[in-house]
Length: 104
Image (cartoon, rainbow, N blue to C red):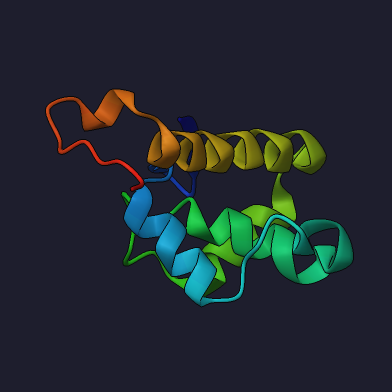
């Protein structure tokens, strides 16, 4: 989770499975980060608002991103948070008590 303040408002940036799905629908993939950084970095930042601040205005999000210090470190932290959601999806820990299966 990342916390920041802008114009007197507090923001908590984080992802859940729904915010990642929204990012993917908008064209996000991990592979595109290095191929399209001008598009993907702001998209990754915007996506971190979807869980807790869906109604944040795009202009405000863009302004916050533009004025951030250490943007490279921030984007790295956001990518780590996205990867944690992907790992959670594939983890067996969340599936305890669910059906087992086998190949026959």
